[in-house]
Image (cartoon, rainbow, N blue to C red):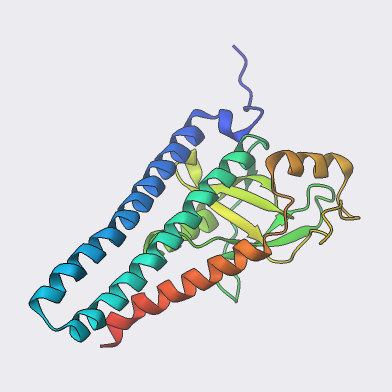
Length: 228
């Protein structure tokens, strides 16, 4: 019997299970947050009958705001799950040794080899999704125990913890895409075609701005109770 690595990361059974688990959780979160919005409207309608309308509005506005942000964050996570699948069905896993101590700017920053020039490194960062404590533990484990990665770090990657039981999205720290959508000079034709197949050659400026705005609002909301 021959033992060989799958041609793509998604062909690995453990990877498939991890992705399906993340998809279920993401869909559940999106559905629950979406259901909260009409529930808030119904509760507001009942609250107006029991308390004064200005007080009801004062209570309802922050609740609806938090719900809207939650829907936005869940929607971004759902989109990211689909993009991760495209990467995993196009690229194979590659192993990376432990990274050691974190970057001075934070544990999420590190380097991956350039596919066209392996001796050169690309600055990348783990994307922040889900609960902060769980995300930090996953990133810390990836740094200390080593990990596998799939994709092209100049555009997008997916990182898997040992055993491929947890998947993390990775983005480049510097944009390696031309604004006109043409192949960058330092990207080989083969690497460019593969990145196009995975759908990771579109400049992420709008999505990235939306993601940063939503997570900034989410962090502000999470910090408010602790400040009281």
